[in-house]
Amino acid sequence: MTRATRRALEDGQILDLLQQSDFEDDEDDPFGGDDTDDEYLPRRTRVSDSSTSSESEPESQTPVLQRGRGRAQSRSLSLGRSFPRRGRGHTPRSSSARGRSSNSGIQSSTPPDSEVQANLFTWTASNFPKNLPMLSEPSYLKPDRSHFSNVDFFTQYFDDELIALIVTKTNQTAVSKTGKSLLLTTDELKLFIGLSVIMACIGYPVLRMYWEIRWRIAIVADNMSRNRFVNIRGSLKFVFDDDVTAENKNFDKLWKVRPLLDKITKACSKEVKEQHISIDEMMIPFSGSCGIRQYCPGKPNPVGLKAFVLANSDGTVCDFVVYQGPNTYPEYNNTNFGQGEKPVLKLTETLVPGHLVYFDRYFTTQKLVDELKKRGIESTGTLMKNRIPATARDEIETDSSLKKKGRGSSQVLVRNDDNMAITKWYDNKPVLLLSSIFANEKSDVCRRYNKKEKKYVNVDRPEVIKMYNTHMGGVDLADRMLAVCPARSRTKKWTIRFFYHMIDLALNNAWIHYKKLQEKKGRPKKEILQLRFYKMELAQTLIEVNTAPFELSDLDEDEENNVPGKRKRGRPATAPIPSKLRRSQGSSHLPEVTNKQNRCRMPKCDKKSTVKCTYCDVFLCLTFKRNCFKLFHECK
Image 1 (cartoon, rainbow, N blue to C red):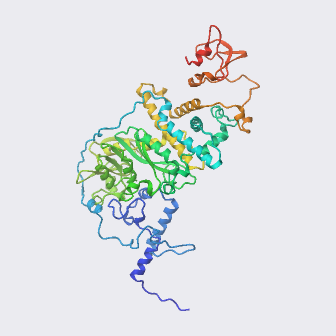
Image 2: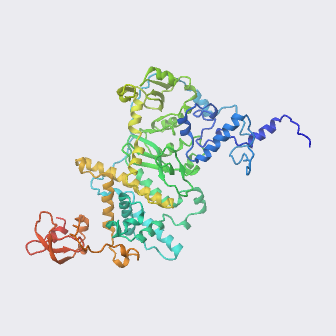
Image 3: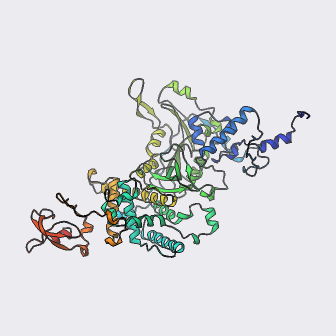
């Protein structure tokens, strides 16, 4: 056997090996960080920062894919070779599979127009005086909600039209699959929503516990059987599948919930948008099988559907868009904007000039701030080190120099056209902000804890930091409110989880309006319902308005044994006072004469009576001189 001779590779052979290797350059970065954008540094010259690199990775990829790319890249750099790794089952990817042309490894020596234009700007240390803009007219009209009830706030999102659509599509799908209708009605669907909200507030870990005799919840078990509830939940549909074309199914990953999504986003867009408004990510938790499921590390619920949300500082959701891949923003597909810039441009399309938008480092770029400025919208956001404009990198002070100056030191660099400024502030660690409206013109003092001195100290704070901290937390506040008794019962269908999340979102916005209305009326804070109790009261109203009491014959066979019987010993429990709505349903209330007397439940009446209401289960006076039975049911 002859030994193979070593020979040098030709240039063409080296290029072919490079094209077939697993090494990926910046052109595959889903954030849009290509070499043609001056906002993004190439990966090889990126500043070493663990927090920066972790946040700049795309959430749309799973951790396995991220780690795999990192291993291949580091191995190629460390071993000084770029030929493909060989192993069992390894198939080299072609250039078309990677989305790159055959000459992708060769970079053009001519920079694109955007990079040339950005390099014309210079950054110098100077003042950045700006005045707050005025919202353009006509601004957002405030609807009259002074006469709204708790249910009216909620029905702005889930109105009769949407309820009727869900009922129609659910029954239509049931007929096509089973040959018979589910016989779902609008009243029963509203009852189902009310029961779901009540069950979320109570929070039993297992669904059947609400009907079991030991843990039975009367408001749930008395109004709908368990099997009927499960059957409705598993059959809910928002479209009839045969009405959707194959083309729409391939293009729109959210086609199964599109009518629901359009209705909720339309209702959110009618909310009054404050001048200061923020944009951030929101996760819809779901760990089951779903084609648009994302992994977003650092979130309380990192796995689920990802949405980009526009929210006021008080947590009111004004608009949102659910991420579904390249088809999320079709109008921006042929532009040079990155994945962090597109959601901001999409959500700000409905804003009038004069708004001030805040977002975090995932979105902030010089190109985005310039584009918003053209629309008359000012913006502020934290900035990654690898997105610092190329002409400003040498002008920014190092972290060590700011640290030597002490806590609270800062630096401001203003672009030569006075359209934006970079502010670097050192607190416990340095932070960068890019803004078109704020810098350090009106600095103030904030209190920070000093670990060495073990006490609070005053630290100088630039104006841009103060405004960012004040107005950036709208989406995070909405997330915290969504975590208050959320409807997240176990389900394998992502459409059901999405439906429940829309209910929670509508309830949050409704509660914010209810709270503002009560404060406007001058009601004391202790008398204003908290979010949990607001949900329970609204759900109780939905149940009582749409309830249809069923007989024992309507129960399932295994539920008949779970109906509590009469107490054999001890004093009977006092029945709770029913709500005014239930008391006013006159056709259901009948008097019954018993063999024993009990205290009349009419307020301010201390007499005893033998007459009991069969529906309310309370004793009331019914005599020639005292007709508490009538007064009680008239809610007087």
